[in-house]
Image (tube, rainbow over all chains, first blue to last red; front, side, top):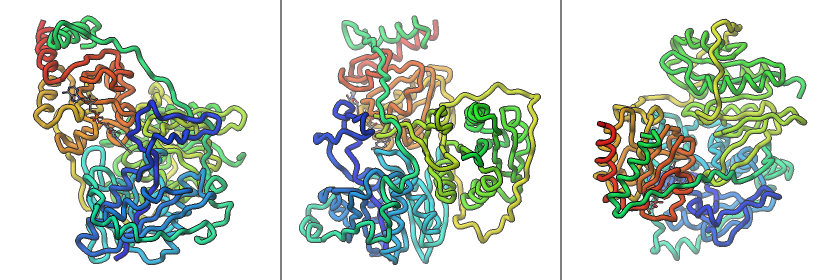
Length: 266
Length: 333
Ligand SMILES: Cc1cc2nc3c(=O)[nH]c(=O)nc-3n(C[C@H](O)[C@H](O)[C@H](O)COP(=O)(O)OP(=O)(O)OC[C@H]3O[C@@H](n4cnc5c(N)ncnc54)[C@H](O)[C@@H]3O)c2cc1C
C-alpha cells in the first residue's frame, strides 16, 4: 500500500502579529527571518494520519512538497516522524501560484509517481486558508474524496472516514484509490524521533521541476493561476480597552460586573 | 465576458426551510445582479423542499433550479456537482456563490475544478470593480492576520460566503419567480462516496451560534474543572453558552464542537467573554463580530485586550468566583 501526503511549508502561524509584516507594494509577506518556517500544521496531521495507517499495515509513506527554495529541515520533519521518502517540487516557476496551479502541479506529480492507494492533505493551509488543493487534486485525478477527516480506516480496497461536521461527524465510505483531507480533530501528531535522525538525514529527496512532471511554464505558478490577489492589507480593528481595577482582584472582578451592568451589557 | 450573465447561488435548506446563509447570499447576490441588471438563480437540491422554494423568491431570487426527489436524503457531492454543472451550462453565470458551510466547503472546490474556474473560499466581502465589472472577493488570510482582495480571472467567479457577513433582504411576499426542474437520473453509478451514518454530538441546551452571551475558556483554564465554573457562570444568564479556544478542545477538556475560530465556529454574540485566552488571530477571527468583547487574562500584554472593550488583568481562578457572585446579585436585583 502506498500513501502520498502533500505538505506545504508555511511561516509559523503562531508567530505574533507584531513580527508579522506585509509588503503592500508586492502583495506579499515580508519574509521576516524571525518568523520560522514550519510544516503547515494540518499537513503534519495528514502525516500523522498516514503513519497511523502505516503502523497497522506497513504502508509506504511518500511526502510531496511544493514550493521554491524549500527548507530541507522542514521538509525532513515528516521523515523524522516516520515517513519513508520525500519528493520536492522545487522551482522558481512554482512561485505565485493559487489553489488551481498548485493542485494541478501536485496532481501531475502524483501521476508521475503512478502507484498510490491513498492521498492525504491537510484540510487547509495556515497562510492561504483556502482549503481547495485536496479537492482539486481529487477532481483532476478523478478519484473520490472526503474532506475534514478525524479518523481514517483502510481495508480491502476501501476507506472508511469520519468527517467532522459543524454539529458532529459523518461516517463515509469510498473505494480506493481516494483522497482525504485531515483536520486537527485527528489528534496530536507524533514528535519527530531523534532515533530516526541519522536514517532520515540519509534519505535524499527526489527533486522535480515543472518539465519533469509534464508542465509547461504557462501552466505553473503565477502563469497558471486563475485567482489574482489585487491587494493584501492588515485591517486595523483595535478597540480601546478599558481596564477595570480595584484594591484586590476580587474587588476588580466585582467592579467589572458593576461596569457591565451600568452599561446594560449584562 | 458578455456571454456570462447573472448570479447562481447554491442554496441550502434546514428542516425544509431556507437556511439563513442562503437568505444572506440572496441579499448579496441580488445587489450584485441589480448592479449588472441581471438575474439571480438559486439551485435547490433535496427532498420535500417546496416551501423553501417559495421563500427563495420572497428573499430575492428570480429563478430556482430544483431537484426535489425523495432519493436525495443528504448532501451527496457527486450528485450535487452534476446539478451545478447542468445549471451553469445553461445559465452561464458571471458569479457562483455557495455558503462557507459543511456543504459549501466541500462542494465549492469540486465545482470550481470541474468548471475550470477560480474560487475564493470563506469570503467576507463582495464588491464590484466598476472598470472591469468583475466581482472583487475579500477574505482573511494568514489565519486572520491579514486580508486580501481577490479577482477571479475566469468565469464564473466563484466564492464560498462566510455565514453572518452579508445581510439578507426584507422578505417580500409579492415577489414571484420561475421554477426550472433539474433533470438528472439519480444513478448510483455516479456516486463515489457513500454516507453510512451521521452523528450529532452537539450538547443539548443553547447552541453557540444562537447564544446572546458566550463565555469562552482557553488554555489558561487548565482543565475540565475550570470549564465547569464557566458553565455555572453561563447558567446565570438567560441565553448564554460556553465556547473554547482550540487548545482546550485539543486537550479534550471540552467537546471540539464548541471551538471558536477560523477552523471552528464563527460566532457574533452580543457579549463575548474570553477567559484565559491569549487572542491569537485564528481565534479572534471567530469572535470579532461580537458586539462587546471582554477579556480576563493574567497577562496585560495578551493580544486579546486589543480587541476587547473591557479588560480584567487577573488570575481567573481568583477573579471568576467574585465576578460570578456579583453578577448573580445584580441580575437578581
Ligand atoms: C491553521 C490553524 C488554525 C487554527 N484554528 C484555530 C481556531 O479555530 N480556534 C482557536 O481558538 N485556535 C485556532 N488555532 C490555534 C491558535 O493559533 C492559538 O494557538 C490558540 O487560539 C491559542 O489558544 P489559547 O489562547 O487558549 O492559548 P494560549 O495562547 O496558550 O493562551 C493562554 C492564555 O491564558 C492566559 N492565562 C494562563 N493562566 C491564566 C490564569 N490562571 N488566569 C488568567 N489567564 C491565564 C495566558 O496569559 C495566555 O494569554 C489555529 C492554529 C492554526 C495554525
